[in-house]
Length: 102
Image 1 (cartoon, rainbow, N blue to C red):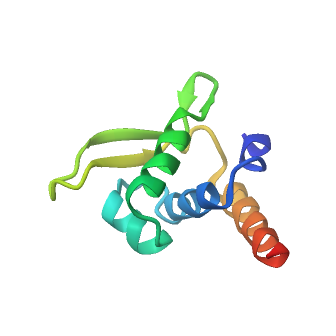
Image 2 (tube, rainbow, N blue to C red):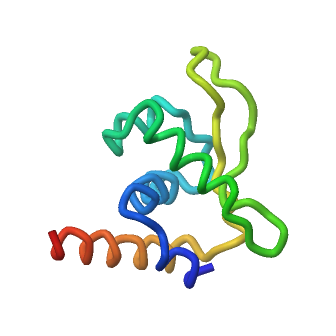
Image 3 (cartoon, one colour):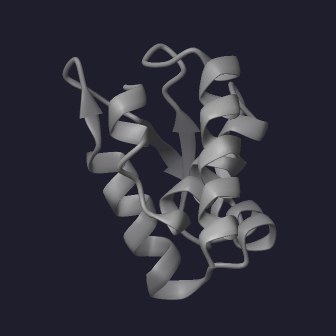
């Protein structure tokens, strides 16, 4: 899974970082908008790509039902696919590399 993470875009890494901060907890679109500053189609595209990222026939993130506020679906990180601590470290490292190259 770490090899797939290395190929993620900056926005994918931002959203994955938000999921990793709340590993094991259901994440809403409102939370992702607030923590990543992505919204609308750009956030939807990233969510879509992360949900289509598959490893061992399982998705990286999975929908877990509609949000009560009516703002889309709620999502859950599939923590069976990766070691959360190692993934946090790798995502943090990659985000720093992106920022340094800009």
